[in-house]
Image (cartoon, rainbow, N blue to C red; front, side, top):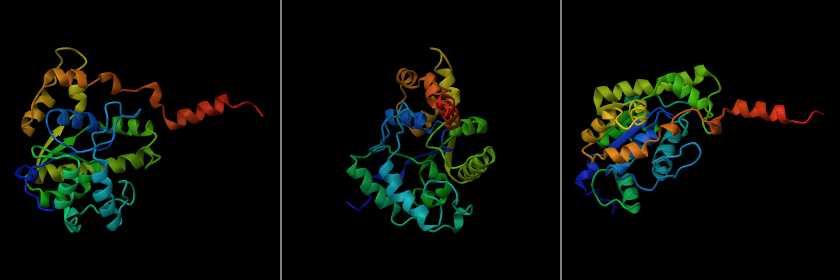
Length: 253
């Protein structure tokens, strides 16, 4: 079971991006186009289409490694050392992922690992998986920051400057990945906007699926991508809004 004996396992799809960029909807399309990602967390009010993220892989491999190098397992401060070339290898990385995926039902073929924190240790992954394809999910910085302020579980920073520093860390790694790996950038807003009308342009995500060698199904993608999910919603009020509401509704002493 410890031997990596699938040729396809040497050619993973790594899906990265700054959190709140649309990595989940992008990964969902990749998943339903024929790639295997193992067991993942389902949907919730913060992500109605589902996360498509293998939480066991993240918890069993990434979090302990980050902790071992003195970085925040959650991707906050303290950050991972910016010099990825100085970081140690992740022990037995390929076999550990392979064993986990076998337990989750992997039987060969295309597979993906969605992990926004992988960008901080891209070299350690690329050294073991040099044939990997990297999908870099992008979004406007201001939209990311706004989404972080409106999302309860994003509590790493309290100021716009803090969030921007965190974004910059990711984007510096994206540049390195584009220079050193087989990578493609995708901006979900483009195909999400395209799904607002029956004949809207979704060629960017079609091109991504073709590049990955997966099966394209335009009808499914247009049904799967719900533009109404990708915008401001009353359920996603900022924490401060809810604090203000509680104060306004509190009876006078």
